[in-house]
Image (cartoon, rainbow, N blue to C red; front, side, top):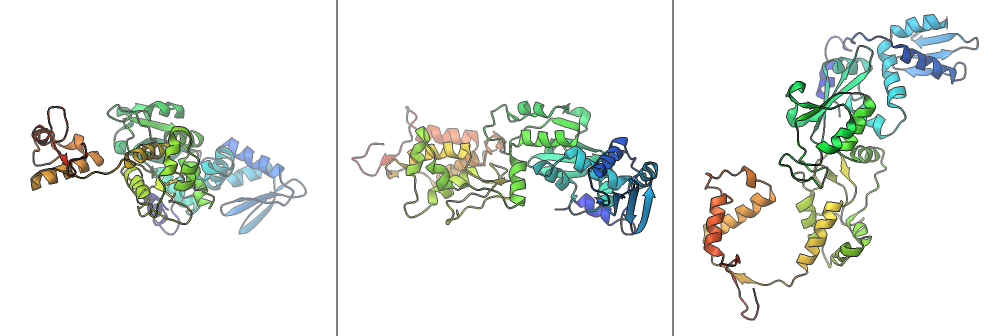
Length: 392
């Protein structure tokens, strides 16, 4: 997926955009020499648009349409300085970011390095490339030495000046930032859309930027990468439940029995985009998909998480109760009000309903009036079983 900034950069001017001036750092040049020293003579080192090799005499050969041979180390440095963008791009990903894997794939994805040219990316990086990852906004920029720097913050703070936010430089500081939501409540699910803002990591290098994202959203990049490589190992509901033991072993009794409606309810309750930023890839089992949409998150969910398992244990016990039929006297408006209250609680809208908004059925005063009318002195809803032998 290309960033719109990249698309805009690639379409300006005649063909390729103008590449920002980039210096060739000594570290990058030394890395080229080291890489060539580890290669057999005439074995090329590839950059975008040209290659470099050593000949049998220890001199250097540069090929990019026209062939230049017999270059001294000084000649090579001058030639590479003229092509500093391509060399620094190679150096960043080959030497700074390091080996192929989740980190490298993720940082290349940020700037669409597998789809856009160096010229297009460097022009876009000069302006800043923005990417979304869950509730994070990641902005990648470029120094005059071709180095990448990353600004990471909550997406809600995208337009807030950095000096107005709490600034951090150690990725591990994020462990405290993700513990509580904006109301001070503990966040048991790190991928819930409840990340508090007000902070910024304004100037991270590639490795620290990756570590920060993995600290805020553990294993999301790793699973995203496995999915891209076709290696995501998904553990479905039945397999996950089969390995539960102790107090969670009761979930194993909550089996299909001719249908998987109960698991649909679990997924609808816990795995909707409004509750979790992951995209659910697990199903009932290898042969049976759930009827509930898995969401649109960029990173996949490969198995039922601990929050789902814990909730399912409670629902297993509740659903094991013998159902009874109760009779209540409600006006049509009161029935609609009960529906509105349930919807408001389920959707987390209670705090958004103003006290003066008595048109909303979940309004606090409306709910208190309904409680005063229908509840007895012991706080029980005044319904009665239709079977006189049953107890409420």
